[in-house]
Length: 197
Image 1 (cartoon, rainbow, N blue to C red):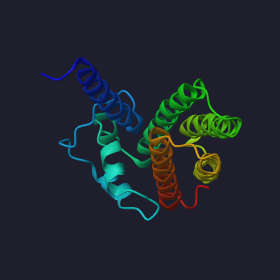
Image 2: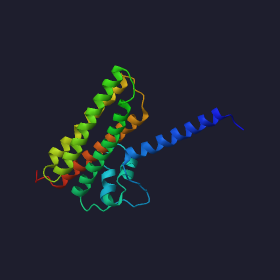
Image 3: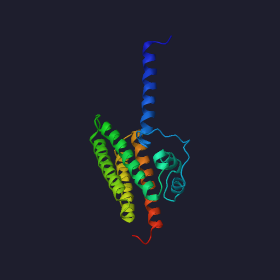
Image 4: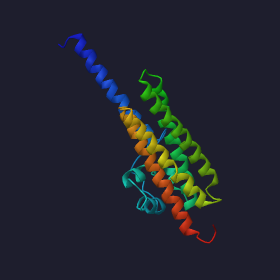
């Protein structure tokens, strides 16, 4: 039989793996159990095949909830994407806030605070966009696109401060996927209604 110290070590490792694996999926689609067995709608298929989409598989998985599949038009789908983007940004912001509470160097703290501000901006932008989606797709398209540089700046700060946090890297990657989905859907809406705007 293994000594008690080895058993404790094994339990700690298993618990850590379990916690990390559950956290990374919550950053994809917070508070949603996603099953790929739900067939996607043609709207979702078309969107996820768009030029701006950075990760088709992520797009299909993120948009495989029954509410999204039931979207009847581009506007409804776009509004739901913005809400998912905001929820994802909130989940990632929570991770940043959790990490900030731990002791770190001044440079790391500065980088983390930069990212907190970027995520607050992303949340506000996604929420604003979801409420303005019908009114002006051109403005909405711009509002979604400018989230990307904020997150890129956050990533640059993390790299410069040598912050090593896989959950943050994953959150940053996912938010960029939502930005690409938002950009694609707003571009699609502009093309569907070119004379209205």
